[in-house]
Image (cartoon, rainbow, N blue to C red):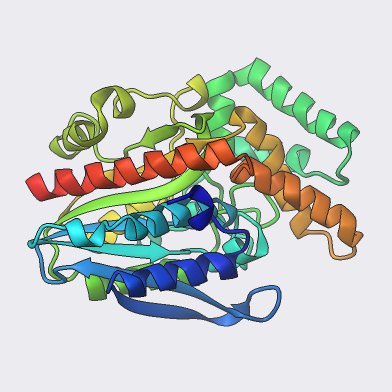
Length: 363
């Protein structure tokens, strides 16, 4: 199996490969079609779900791709590769696997990180019944300085100076936390978690209610890209550090990979509204063990790319060739075109998937 048989150049192609692989592997398919949005050429957008193994088993794996739109190409490749490599045929009898493909299909299809409402889906899963959305007061001091007016070296240098001044005053860890934890007041800002639940958020809850209703123990992976060494996996486990579920994740993937890791060499931000946290809440008192698994790309250089993504969302009359050129750079940051990167991440993803399933079977 070659990496290019699993990676795709478009959402429509990735979706087609996923559905074909699921059918060939005799999976049970269900598609949740977006009620309002389509691909750029008018094709349907959908969250596609493939189920394998015993749907009533107490042990279930839930593997998600495409939470952050363009990052979906890598997670999709791993899901497709696992099916094409015969993963479903090797499952123990008392275990099930649920693959959720393209959780943010709009971002996947339109080459943007965010949803149709410019919401960072991986900050949208806050518990809105708990009252006001989490505050990020330090972001308020940076918001206007972070907004790019024109995509020029001068404008990017201005933003870099503002971040450098913040770092001088508060430190690198504080800047990382401020930029990454999520904010809920500025729809035109970075890492906006939304003023309401996104369609993808509600749809994932439906998937869990309908397909994990008998699950007592759940293994979870949410595939992402960006953080970590180039082409290498980086683990963000949000089970309680020091608890039994965190220890189990360490057993699955290696304590040295899971425990005490520092994204970009800094303290982990106080992330809010993660898919991980939403799935925990949807499952109630049932146990879930897992991680967000990133494949490294440009490190802290991704900050500039996030600004580019937001700037492009605001440009309605940008010259088409300029847009295509900038989108290509952005795509290479989220899912490098480098064949070695794609080969390495596919191989790693298949190994990590099998380790999670093996760990779940022994749980």
